[in-house]
Length: 60
Picture (cartoon, rainbow, N blue to C red):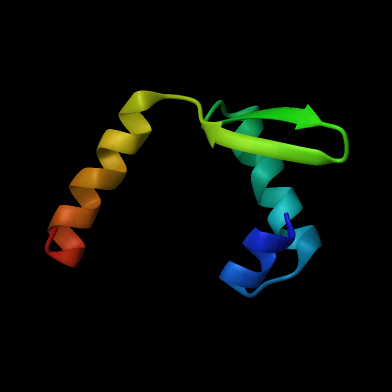
């Protein structure tokens, strides 16, 4: 989670709350290995949506 905190620039508790909501809604899937949690997108359509938004708002 520290990598996300540093990249986004907010508190760990804020990131944790948002990740929990995204997991509850099925947007993210998580798996735990030892003391690390790995997240991935739970639905391929989410990645497609992100790609379309990137094209529209970032020019590709």
